[in-house]
Image (cartoon, rainbow, N blue to C red; front, side):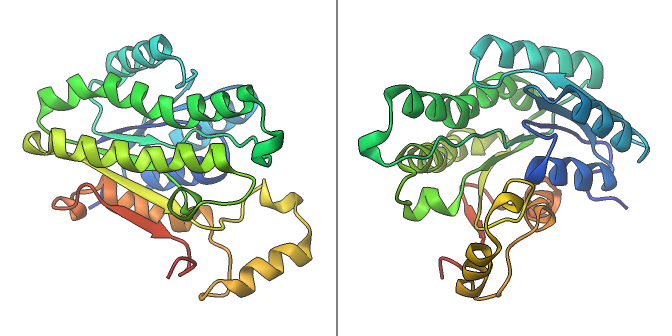
Length: 248
């Protein structure tokens, strides 16, 4: 029996990296997948085709989760097509790294808007459906940087830290209706974005991690699978670090 058979998941920012890994593993486990993307139209079409080939229903939506109205419209469209929303994975995120003295107001605002406000927008948009169903799993993507901070990433760390406080509050508010809210905090995950980094730098990072390797999108996706499924039925308000022991 597949772990997510018959469930519908919304995953934001799913055309590459961690988001794509989550969408793929959810589909392999029987979930119907509605995913969002901002600009990668071709990648979205390819992913939609790949997911549908797994025998589930999948659809990509060009939607900006940082926009309150667009989040509302997205959820209405998903309900129309899929009928239910059982799982929400807030994965969309950006970075605009710089030292505080060089960080512009716009660089700060934009990262908070895309990374943190989007979580509010999407959670608010699915809340009514999940309350009606008296069931739901909300999974919010933070980062080890949201827990320990990082020089040159004050905006990103603030957004990812904010996600933790938000998720714990939602867990307290919605727990009596059997709606769970948890956080995944990835460490150094090797994706298309990290491929551009200097190999020596990457090697140094790997050596500093107790498990001596960077994570893969699947490492994060499998944790999300656990939190999305009924295996974690008694888990809410938690932060799970997927970091190879980096913060140990």
